[in-house]
Image 1: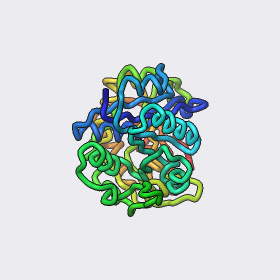
Image 2: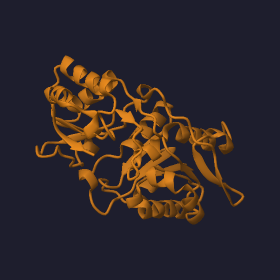
Image 3: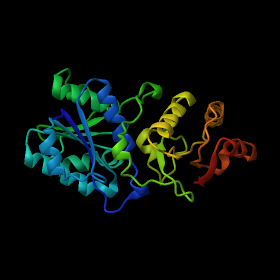
Image 4: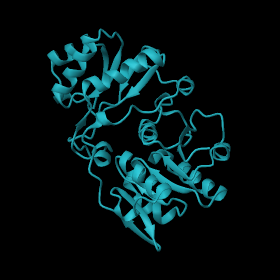
Length: 298
């Protein structure tokens, strides 16, 4: 049994080779650091049905993540959960939830709260309210919900400024083996990682700025490379995919990452996404010398 079940819906096809849901994994580890009992299940790789997971965990709170691509699957999970136990409190978060909070709450009655944007603190405070009666929903920034049939949108939550305070995303050795994320062109097992949140560029086609805001927040090089070293030594990973919107937005950040990788004498291939106007030949050479072999220009 668990107080909280966090679930990632099954997709029609494996996106990015079945990449673990980093956002949900971060929330799981954050809730566990606050001494809550949490089960995290990714239906992309689980050999159990959602009904079986519900039966085994008997959660009081269900947190569902997902994208626009999986919105209908997420809605069905909420409906199945309420059909199983009408008292389960259902949260829905992620990019689609953030951009469609009003529409989602209007049309999917089985969802009790939408968590908008960066989810760790808002989710924790909702959990505290539901399980410990520590505060009222009206006091929680960054959420939308219903009261007496009316949809309420609380004010946006302030971003987490010190990302180093967050524990690493929750990972499980046996579950990691079920993903088939590979390094491009190298066909070796990879893990995904993010060293920053937000993006000041604000491209119209990208969700990063709309989801996390236009202010860039950064993890320290030590914190990032600590996580990389753990992935390389404990999880059988051979390469790293940076999923930052633009890893090279702040030159001092990418230089500090390269310096820390070299200082520890870590030898592994990594790839990232960059913008043309954020790099030059000198920086690209520094990145290459630290193991970067492939970049995506956006």
